[in-house]
Image (cartoon, rainbow, N blue to C red; front, side, top):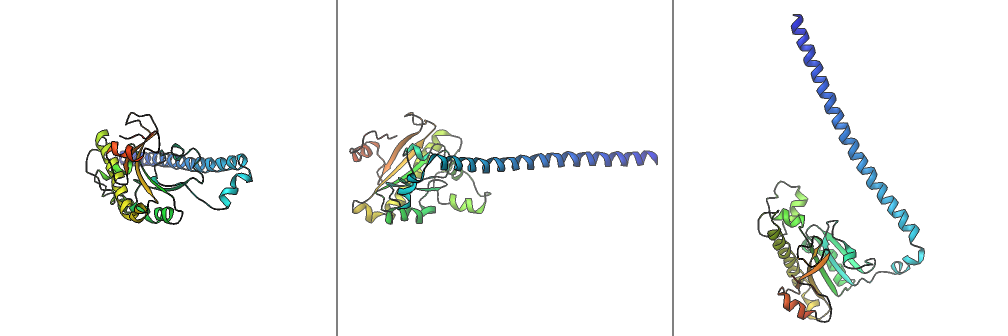
Length: 243
């Protein structure tokens, strides 16, 4: 009887020990998550305070009067796509529209506002190296959250290996071309009137195209994808890089 009691006691102590270990691990995880939250909020507040300290009221006067951006830019929400790679001073210059996969379909209203209300003469669609949204669209994404699935459903690329550099590169370009085709159809009146140019590009921060890290590689102009013809259509501007 005593041996049974000891065995039960031992089992109980072991269970308590396991529960304590689990609780400690859970607490550590929660503590780590809280630390990340605190760090993120602190980072934002510090950055904003520094921004206010560096910029006097005169800096904001042009913005108070309204906006007249030079371009509507549709780019991926990926934090590695740097707006200052397109414009060293994007404030007031770029009407930025960000979503996963640099899509027109999922941001149509914002893009239309930039073209038809702010009257930007350039619509720049920017894909990027190893885009996560494009890679996801290459695979079975049926188990992802409903809202994410909805956004991915409008990226029409071939299924393939999301780890294969060549396949992903081709898919990123195909997605950019798809978005340009959508935009060309949507803004046909502006194109015919010569009020707008639509450029598709890939922001190559990985240097996959071997033209330098951070290069903007033009892949499409108003539906034209042939590199030489792209350059010919942009002879008014130096430094055009195509694939």
